[in-house]
Length: 233
Image 1 (cartoon, helix red, strand yellow):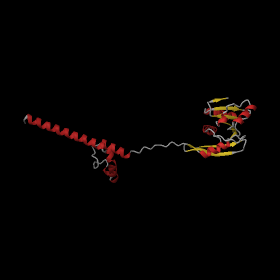
Image 2 (cartoon, rainbow, N blue to C red; image 1 turned 180 degrees about the vertical axis):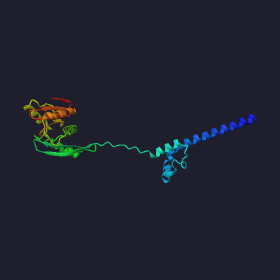
Image 3 (cartoon, rainbow, N blue to C red; image 1 turned 45 degrees about the vertical axis):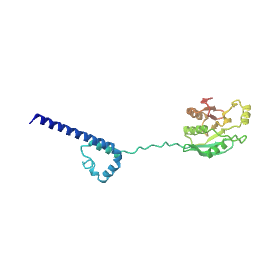
Image 4 (cartoon, one colour; image 1 turned 120 degrees about the horizontal axis):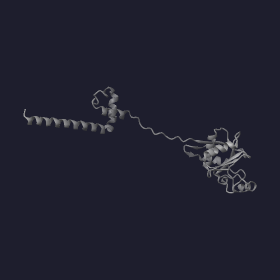
């Protein structure tokens, strides 16, 4: 056979092979690019006749990569975003001077409850003058965390909370341990004790939280908490 004819035939075969390869790659690319838009349709077909999948009827058996991609897409589970659960906060308080009692939830679903705060403010009022002052919510959170630390079910007994300036001044005249600019005047301090629990134990738990000032008064068996700088005495 003439050499030129043989060369022509070979060139034609190479060109046809190149076209087939090009068309094959083009088909693969098209399949992957439209996979997202055709996904619902493909899933419906597979559900109607599951035997077609992987047997060369729906997808040619030699296209294993495409089959695996589509199978993975069809069976991919949706990503679930977990919601952060914010716990509610409750307090059980008893005022040792007035006998007032409260057991309520003051924080829920990420918000302080206005009605509950109002009741707490009333219980923690200056019982000498009956003056009510807003109590720092950070102080309430300290009491809540302290309760969790101690793992107790007994109420927190309040010795003193808010003090009107005149009450603080009177106490200061008769007691050397009362600060002139006490956090009690700002509704940011509270003196507490817990039945059948040593003040030393309460102090230790409060100090471990490192949330503010902690005062220890063993003679009177109470502990002072405030929302000032972390310190102790």
